[in-house]
Length: 523
Image 1: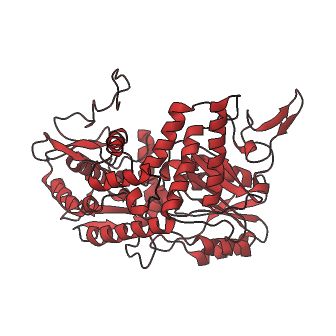
Image 2 (image 1 turned 180 degrees about the vertical axis):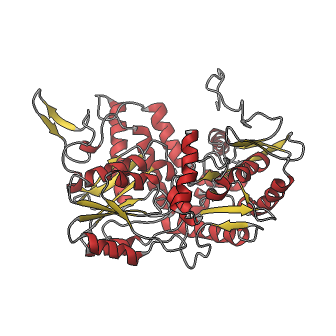
C-alpha cells in the first residue's frame, strides 16, 4: 500500500502517464534499484500531460489526448530522479551557495560541488588539468570560451558552417575567422578543414569551433578525428556539445590536443538555467571575464585579486538548484548508459526515417541514410503539395499541434546558414529572405512569404519517446498534406505570421495555466 500510494502521488506530481510500465519504473526508483534505459524512459516528467485537440473539419474541440513531445532538440523533459532531487533541494534546503553560515547553505554548496565533480566525471576529465565552470547555458558557455580564446591576439577561428548561432556568431564577431566547407549533404568536409588549418597555422593560432551534433540534421560529427587533425596543426577545439551530450560520450582524457566544451542542462534532462564549460585549467586562468562578486579573492581601493578557476569564471550567485539538477542528470544518464541511450535513439530514428521518407512530397534535410552519415534523433524536412508547391512549415506543425497534440518546431533552428545551404539558397537569396524578417523585427516564424521555401519543420525526440505514438506521425503528415490542399482547416494571419483555427482563440491553450491562480496547482 505504501508503494502504491507513493506511485499515485508521483504520477500526479510529475504528470506521468500512470500505465503499468511507468508504475514499475517508479517502483524500481523508490527501491533504489538501477534504472536502465527502458525504465528511465518511462520517467520523463510531463509524459502524461493531456491536451485538447480539435476537429479539422468543424474547428471545434474534439477530445483530450496525451501530448507527444517532438521538440527535444529545443528542451528535453526533466527525468523523475532529477526533478525529485531539485524539488528536495528547493523545498527543504533552499539557501544561497557559499554565501552564508548554516546547514541549508552547507547542503546547497555541497550539492553544487557534487554536481561539478559529476559533470567532470561524465566527460572522464583529469581534475588536475581540466576545470568545470558553471554557466547558465551553452550560448553563454560558447561565448565565454570564444572570449577566452581571443586573449591571444594571434587567434584565428575556423568555424563550422553548420554551427548553431551560439557557436558561430561569437567567432564571427571577432572579425578573425573563416569557414571550412561542408559536403553537399551538410556533413563536414574534413579535407577542406585540414586545408584551412594548414594555411592558417603558418602565421596564426587556429581555433576550431564545431558542434558535436547538428540541431538541424542530427548529424553526429567525428570528434576524435577532428581533434587529431587539430593537434597536428597546433589548433585548439571548442565544442558546442548541447545536442550531443545526452547520448554522445566524450572522453577528454582520450581526445588528442587541447579541447574545451560547453553544455546546457535543459538539453540533458536537467533544469533550465544550468550548464557548464569544461576546459584546460590554464585556458581558464586569469582575470574574470565578468568581474563581480564570487570571482575574486580580495579587493582594495587600488587592487583586484582574482580567484583561480573555476571561480573566476562564475560571476554572482549561481542558479544553484538548477546546477545541482545538472549533476543529478549526468549521474542518472551515466547509470543508464550513454551507449545504450544512443542505441535506443538510433533505433527510433531508423524506424521513423523509414516511414517518414515514404510520405508524399516530403524531403528530409541532409542524408536520410544513417549508414552513410550517423544521425541523432532529429529529422528536419520540407513538404510540397500535389502540384509541387511548398507547404509552409508553420502550417504543417500548427496542424500537428491543433489536430494531434504534438509539440514540434518550425523555422531555421538558430542555424540559419545551414538551413539556407541545405535548401540550395544563394547568399543573395538568403539575404533577401532574412531582410524581410528584419523588417518585421522578428526571426523566422515559418509562416511569412518566402518561409515555405527557406524554412523547415523539425521533429526531435529521445529515448523516453513513445514508439507507438511516434510512428503514427508519418500518417498524420499525410493527412496534413491533404488539409493544406483543402484550405479550410487553418487560416493564415499574414500580419502576425501565424496559422490559426477559424473561430478559436489564437492560443489554443488559453486558460490552461495562470500565474494568477489562487488555488493549488498539483497538491
